[in-house]
Image 1 (spheres, rainbow, N blue to C red):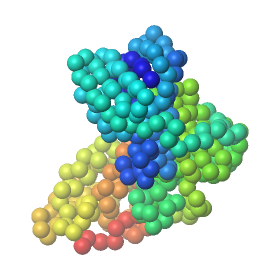
Image 2: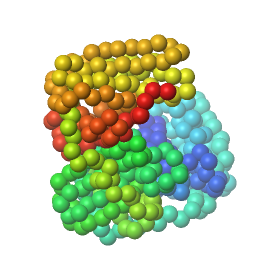
Image 3: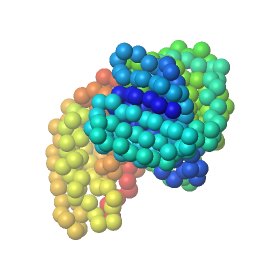
Length: 374
């Protein structure tokens, strides 16, 4: 195998395919990227037990691509990434003889790295399921960015580590929750079939980031896997087994209290108060005290001290209310909302409250209050 290729193009392909590789893969071949070199195109594949990524670049005039001999090789992702970064050359040469020793060179630098034969790579079934629909990559990015952070990081309930996507024929509903908070996006888009699937949140985040904003993405799925792909890129991920909980029951039926204010002002106030926290708390617990005359945010720690800040609210409806909340949860919820002004609706001191944007009613963020300071 012998190929010359643009350094920047090769680096891009390695970065994308590399996101599918686990650092703790039980199979040595899966610790590497598989390079398939053909006369008219190159493919790079990376995979672990959850996600498989295959990125393809066809030969064209926009980058150097010269093939003297076709072939396949698997090279450790960490090694190839470092080598390509360190080669100070616009063009990189990859050459393999009769063994798996791969020579990678550019300008005056040369590296000889042991790899694996392409035939050692596990067979991945990239067959596309029959049911599919198309969406803008920018919309996929928005959906994921507004929901992924609320998924659980604990394996105690595997289904909660995922993002649930459900289509009933009229509405696409995307939900994530860790039982203490919830993020939900609802879109009125036409999809010609119904589905209810759960995809690992981390995988879906990597998928969304891999596509360019101006691209279209086709989404296909069956009972075991989902694919996100176009002419350039194929990403396949397994589905999480288990029934996703009915999250609609988490949302209170009524909200006697309502606060409207600038999102930026609330985020800034939370940031200013968050360094004051108790020694055993990972994140600051803040207090919100509200009535028709003033809205006050405060924090307190026996070890550090306290803070107090009057917020400039646009409006407040309801009687006096005090509650405590996690600074992390509310900050992430606010960052998951579009627009300048947000509405926070409260059901009571210890009941979940919801955050929505005044300019975009498709996204809802729910947070469960904390009962009290330590």
